Structure formats: structure tokens, C-alpha cells
Image (tube, rainbow, N blue to C red; front, side):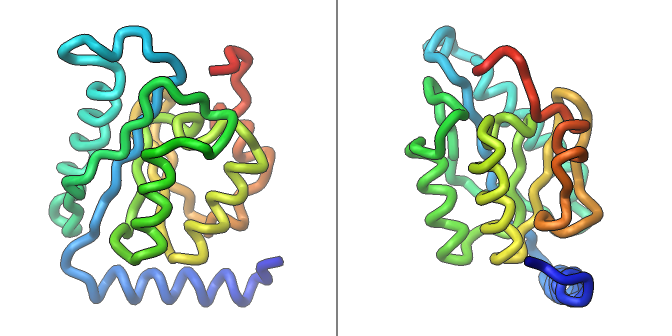
Length: 164
């Protein structure tokens, strides 16, 4: 369990690290639960990526750059973390190659509340920031991921009835 003092210290450490860094490495994660339409020249994964790239471009003054690696899971449900691109992303996070994870919508990362909490704990462990750009507005938590409450997650539109 994260205490208030440790959360405050973690925020301070992240701010100090971010202030010292000139480049903020951004990974873009995209997902579509079915393969329908993925063979089109421009598909939903491309649209999600473009929205994230536009957001990264808006943060250029802060040193944000998009990593060249693509983390696209087309045809994979968000109901589990057994997805090849997500596994590569998590490996790159563990290897210290990623500073910010950007997704188009919160549910692109996970549709399982337990998996979402596990991912947020991993992000906090590595001092990562998770941004959501597009579909439903921006999500840039002012609190460390471990302090995001279930009510806040639900308010942000995590609970979808469409099951994708």
C-alpha cells in the first residue's frame, strides 16, 4: 500500500527526473479487438496512433518524442494482457526504454480492472506517466497511478458495455 509520504516522494522524484531529462521517450499503444478493417490502407490503429502523435507533437517543447517502435495489437481483446505488442511494451518498460505511455482511450490498455490496476502499479514502479489522448478527452492524472480510485477510473469511461 502506498502511503501519502511515499506518494509525495515518488511525485517529487518523477518531477526531478523529468526536469533533468531533455528527451521524454513516448510509447504509443494501440489496440482493436477484432481484425475487421485492419487490412485497409488507413485503419483504426493508424487513427489511434495519429491522435497520439499529434499529442506528442503538442508536447515537443517539453522534449517529448515518439519512439519508433509500434505497439499495435490488432485483433486482440482487452480482456487479458496476453497480447504480443503489450508484452513487448512491458518488456521495453522493464528495460527502461519508455518514459510515457500514450493510448487513445483508457480501454485500449485494458478492459479488465484487475489487469488495469496491475499495469498502473507497474507504471508507478517505473515512474512512468500514462496519457490518454482522444476518444473521451484527455486523461493525465495529477496523482500517481496507485492513488487513482475506482470511482475515478469509472468516471473516465473505463466501464464499457460493448465488451470489446
